[in-house]
Amino acid sequence: MTYRPTPYAPPHASRPPRQPRRPRLTRRGWLVLLLGGVLAVAAAIAVPLLLARDERPAAERPRPLLVPEGWRSAQVYTAVDRALRLPAGAARKAATAPGAALPLPAEARGNPEGYLFPATYPVLSTTEPEGLLRFMVDTAGKRFGTPRVAEGAKAHGMSVYETVIAASIVQAEADNPDDMARVARVVHNRLARGMALQMDSTLNYALGRSTVDTTHEDTRSTSPYNTYARKGLPPTPIGNPGDQALDAVIRPADGDWLYFVTVAPGDTRFTADYASHRANVAEFNAHRRAGKS
Image (cartoon, rainbow, N blue to C red; front, side, top):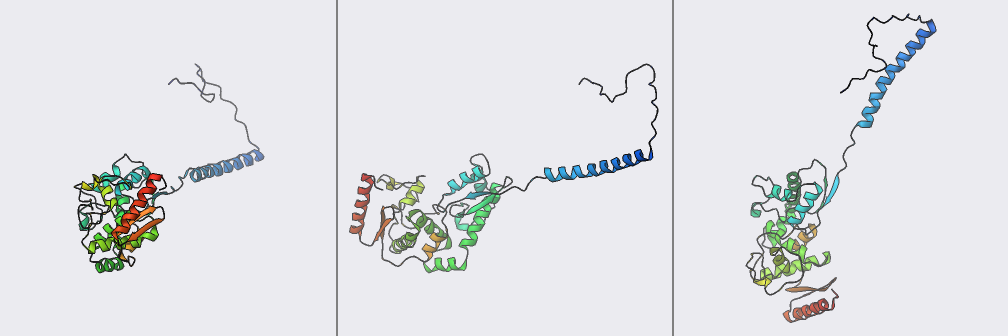
């Protein structure tokens, strides 16, 4: 860097510079100088205080992360990655790592599906995925671990984990919240009779998709989530149910229904008669062909 003398640097000369005559201050001059010094000291104190106040970092505002009811774990992982600005797959890796300390029930065998409780979570730039997922699971454990849930599950011959599985099916199958208790009754009635549940939602979970279309080829799947071919509940939840779906399983509506189909949005029909169900399905297919549903 090239040195450039400032106007205040001493001049370069071979002889020493002349010493200027020192001016003498009057009494008024001394007062002005003293007052200036006081003001300079005050300014020197005030400026750092202002800078410290202005430069102090504002507290970070939490950002909301919404986990809707019924989302599958894969959807939750993607949302967590985006909310925390992480590479794709980071949340899944944190949840399924051998050392992950998620407080899951033993029946879950380390699979958090069903226990990433749907809610709105505040996140910061410093939020770690494992901590956030652990909080979701802990929230689910508190919601599902109440005496009311335990007693309700026992009344239907289920464990709490099985109740969560059934609730995830109800969450996926019900067209609207008002239908949840009736869908739950169909699940209980079919299980009690030893009938296959035949739920499209479980089969679509196995196939990694979300659709209302199920083909005969689909129903030949060997997946343990194929409730057309296998009786009983699937091995794990198929999504993360909310409180209302869980309550529906614990306190289902009264009815002898064994079948239901949503003919059109807001029009779900429940029946115990297979012939009536076939007629409802035919009407559903007619609506689909006409593009009305």
